[in-house]
Each structure stands twice: as structure tokens, then as C-alpha cells.
Length: 382
Image 1: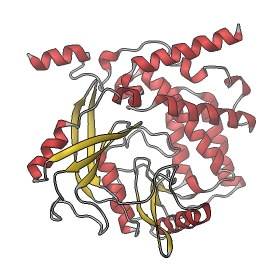
Image 2 (image 1 turned 60 degrees about the vertical axis):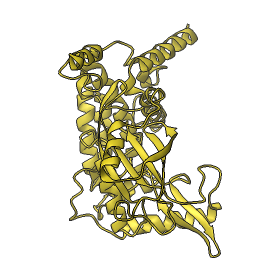
Image 3 (image 1 turned 30 degrees about the vertical axis):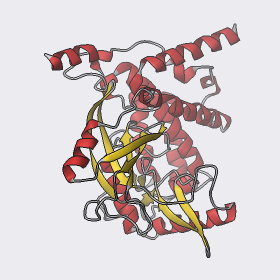
Image 4 (image 1 turned 60 degrees about the horizontal axis):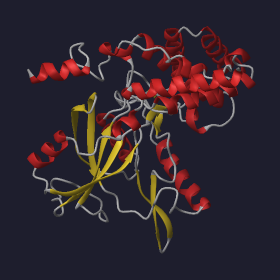
């Protein structure tokens, strides 16, 4: 009976996720083959050379295309690093508004302007990043609405994700240099309005408590209150200067090449998960930081499940399966630590929360003016 029940809920969850494109961005993007018309018009109007070829190289939380122009882009249109090939560019369509990392803010959704702001801050800290050549809005893409795109310099590098990258010791040295550069530049008095920002662990706890209250999760509110008391009384956590946080420093995002002096960084890419705050929130492995990150993942999953079911007009586009995977893993860790009750570990707990249908006519990712997609399209045509 248990196995049949588990299989049932898994099938229900999968069916539900497939029915909701805005909760399953990667699968939704599979049918999108062409470049956004808005991006093409922007580049043409700005005087960029004609695009000879475009190739979609990745789709997950976002779409990534490689553009090949008919010739080099003039420097006055497209500033670039010395080694870059200006006849190529990277175009991203920002699909997910809510990512899968521990630091997030539902009031600061992922968008092109967020990436631009983050890369400007990184450059000011001495980190080499791609130059941004263009960005703008994508009003509609397939069944989804209200997205944005960004066109960036194509970085010349020897890095191939998970295949070609520096030896572990050299890569760790490069990571330490990146982290040190971020840590050296305080953002205490810098306006970072577009980015999620938590100057202290207490600010993050306050945010998580608000989301847990929306989801009606008494056990999470209790755990957050207990951790806050421990941060003050047991660990006596004091504030440090807030800095830029990337949250995804891996061998696919830290682009490197080998020269006669060894491996060196070419550029740091993929800024969708960036935030500003106390760097211990993502760098420290011990208590209370590890527990706080776990609670952040669990709260995010609970909030998403609740809001998608009860208030779909407030639900963000996302890759729900990734968020719920982190939720379930962290929930189990917190139960083992005694921070959450053991009865939460029920097969399909998180996925089952979305098993019921919800009113798609209220969902802004599909429709305009409160009309379902089919009606909205008809209204536009008439």
C-alpha cells in the first residue's frame, strides 16, 4: 500500500508539473527554437551586423543562445575584452524568476536588469565579467509572458563545463581570489535595490518568517524563532560588512584558461543567483549557517507550494522540481537535527501540495487582463 501510495503521488506531481508551464520552465522552453523577436529588432536598430547563425546551447532555468554575426561588432557598439571574438555573442532569455539557491527574495525576481546590476558591482570589485551589449523585455514567449533578455560578450576561454577546467588545487586558488575580491569591497553604503539583500542573518530570518507565515507553517516559524534566539544568545552573531555574493561558483561559471604562468580566470559568468549580504550566509559550513541555509530552502518550497495553489497571480516562474528537491533534502536534514518534527517526512509531502488544480485564469504568466491564454490571444487578434 505504501509503495502504491508513493507511486501515485509521484505520478500526480509529475502530471501537475507538466500542466503548469510556468512551474516547469526548462520543459516549457524545449519548444522555443527561435530567438526573441524583440532582441533581433533591438540589435538591428542599434546597427549590429546581421546574425548569420544562432544555436541554443542550454535550457534549464533560462535559455542560452550563441549568436554568430556576419562580421565583428564595432567596438563603439560592443565593448569587449582584448581576447574576445566580437563576431559572437551570448543571448539569454531569463525564464525563472525564482532560483534554487539559499539566498533569494520573492520581491526581487530574476531579470535582465538584476544581472546588469550584479555584473557592474563585480566589475567594481575587480572581477572580470562579460560586457553587456543589450537587454530588454520579452512580452510573450510561447505560453509565458513578462520575461526579459540580455545579450553579452562571448568570452574566449578554454573552460568546458565538467570537462576542461583547472586542476583542483589551482581552481581552489582562483576561487579564493574571487571570494577575496568580493570580501574586500563593502556594499554597506551602495544602492543594490534590484538584488536580494540580507546584511545580517537576522534580516534573512525575518524574511523567511514572513514567508512561513504566508504558508501557514507553524513548525517552520517555531524553528526560525529558535534559530534566531540561538544566533543571538548561543553563537552571538554580530554584523559584518555586506558584500556581493555569487552563490554558484563552479567550474562551469568560473571561466579559466591555461597560459605559460598557469591557469587564470577569464571571466565570471551566470549571475542569476547573485545577492548582497553577510558572506557567512553562503560561505560558512558550521552552525548556525548550515541550518539557516536549510531552513531557507524549506521555507522557499513551502511558500511556493502554497502560493501556486492559493494565489497563482503571485506565483513566480521557476523550475519547481529543483526547488522541491532542495526542500526535501533540507527538510530531512533538519528533522535529523531535531529542528523539525519527524512526522514531516511523508512521501510526496511537498509535491502533493500542488496535486489539486488551481485557477489558471488568474495566472499572469499565461494571460492578460485576467483572460486565459486562448482568450487573450483571440482578444489580441480581434
